[in-house]
Length: 401
Image (cartoon, rainbow, N blue to C red; front, side, top):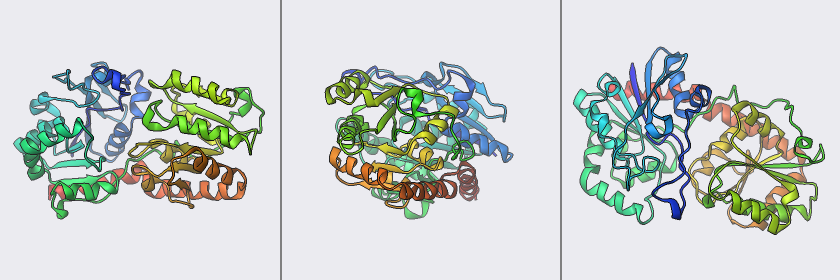
C-alpha cells in the first residue's frame, strides 16, 4: 500500500502568552538520525519494513524546507503552510497545497493527526477526490480553552461535518479520545480501536549505564530523580523543584536532573536558587537517543509533575527502560502508568503529595524494582512500535474493505 501520514505539527512548539504569534518551534531535521527517531517516522519505518510505501508529511518549518528519504525508503516531505499570521504553523497549520500533493493523489490510504486541524480538512478533500480511505488518529480528548474554543466552534459550524462524513475510521490515540469523538457525533462503528503512540522498545530498554551521578559532580551513589519535558509552565517543573526541597529534608542525598528546553528555563534556574536546592539540581539540554537511554537507566525514579498534558512520551520511554514513575493525574497519564503497578499517580498536585510519593519509593528499593519491571512489561505489550504498526495495517485493510 501507498500510505500518506500527514502531521504538520511534527513537534510541540514552546508557547507563552508573550509569544503566541512567534513561538519557539523546534526543528526536527538537524540531522537524519534525529528525524528518523521522531515517532511518526518510526511508525512509517515499520510500515516500510513490512513491504508498504509510506510518505510522512511534516510542516516545512520543522524540516527547514528539506525533503529526506530514510534508508528504509520512507519519504519525508515538507508541507508549505500559508496564513502564518495569526495561524503560526507550529500551532495551527493551514496547508491547501495538500489538495494537489503527489503523495495524497497516489495514496491507497491517508492518515492524519487531530480532527480539528485545517490540514485534516484539506487532506480529507484530497482523500475523497481519489477515493482513498481516510483515517484520523485522535489524541486530543477535550475542547480547547478560549480563544482556541472560538476556532473550534468555527471549524464545527463550517467544515466539521464534511470531515466527519468522509472519515472512514477515527482511531483514539488516548482512551479518553473515544468519549470525545462520540461527543463530536462520530458514529460508534467508525471509532477504534485504541492505538497509542509507539516507541522502539529495542532502543529504550533496561541496561547497564556508563553514566554515574559522579558525572554531575555528586556522590556516585546519590539517589537520582529525573524529569524530561519542555520547560513550560504547563509541565510543572517548578513543582518538581519544590518537591525536591521537601524530599531533601528526609533524603538529603537526593538529586534531580531536568532535561529539556523552553521559555521557563531562566525562571526555573532562579527558582532552584531561591528554594536553596541549586546544588542538587542539574539542567540538561537536548540529548541523542542513546544518551537518553543511559540517563533513564541512571535514574531511580522518573517524574511527570505536569499541570496539563496529553500523553508524555517520556513516561513511555522511562517505562521501557524499566524505570518506575511518579506522575500527576492529568491528561492520558493513566493510559501509560498503572497506579501502584508500574508507578505512582498522585491526585493532589502539591509538593507535599509529590514528595511523599517519591520518599515512599526511595524508602522501598524492592518496590521500585517491581514497579520498573512491570513498566517494562507494559511497554513491550502495549507500546512497542512493531505492535503499533501491525495494528495500523489491520486498520488500513479494514478501512479499505
